[in-house]
Length: 256
Image (tube, rainbow, N blue to C red):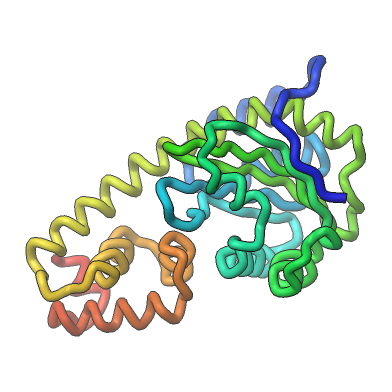
């Protein structure tokens, strides 16, 4: 049964392996952080999936990272499915409130009324349920979710309490990672966008956004998730951007 409640860490203390906690701190800001976060949640609460989404301003969610123990195809399916159906998700609705409050939400696959959302994100990936922390911050909303697969079975009440108690640790680690990732990635992308705007005024705003992210090393799938557009749309904008700039491809873009 789905639920939404104001977040308050569960009372008491929770023992966590020192090496797992050390890895979480060490890898904040590193490319492998989401996999380390999954390993920590797997060891602590038996989670099979993790996902982290951020939101700033009035746009859609931005994927910070997602990982699963059930294979890379499921990671891709879950992320792409969510970016197509996030408008049907209770977590995104809470993030969009921007009321500076924090929440814990719980839902099972059966609780999802949107057939497309349920099929794309839960049925195709084998997810049984999801437990989430949501921060509805007007300056930077955030959701951190852990999931169980149907094979593992749903989270128990004890699992939910343990997750709540651990959540301040997860939030601190994710915030540190997101800040480092944003500082590193956004500074480069923003710089590339400024350079492209100065040197190639014929580019549309979207073509400039795509080209800057291509130059920053993002794949078409990553760019689509970041901008909230389809991968095929990214490829189309990329092709048009190359044409407007008179470039033959990536190698020539990197020389700009």
